[in-house]
Every structure is written in C-alpha cells, then in structure tokens.
Length: 77
Image (cartoon, rainbow, N blue to C red):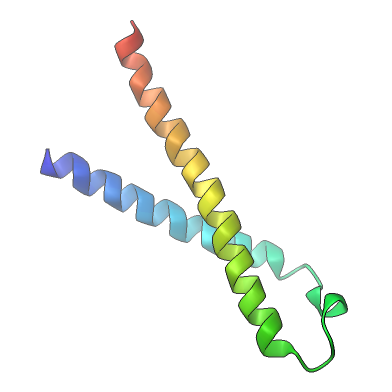
C-alpha cells in the first residue's frame, strides 16, 4: 500500500513540475508588457509565475484524473 502511495506522489509531483516548465516556456512568448505600466517588471514576473502555476496545475490535474479514470475502467468489466 505504501508503494502505491509513493508512486502516486511521485507521479503527481513530476507531472506538476513538467507542466509548470511547459507553461512557463509558453508564457515567455506572450508579451504582457503592453498591459502594465513601464517599469513594472517585478509585478509582471509575479503575475507570470501565478498564471503559470494556475494553468499548469489545472492541466496536470486533468491528466492525473484521466490516468486515474483509465485505471478504474478495469473495475467496470
């Protein structure tokens, strides 16, 4: 039982980190400078970090749920 919990925890952490990296790389292409006043670099970076975490967590949770649901299909038959 502990082995299953360990695998789930490692899969979740790895998934979240991978999707955070992917989302951060994608958001680097977005020019948020147009929405802020000049010289607000710190605020832009903080907003990008928060947006990255929000998007990456949502996408990661979707894929983790999809994996769990597909594993539960075994009990259907």
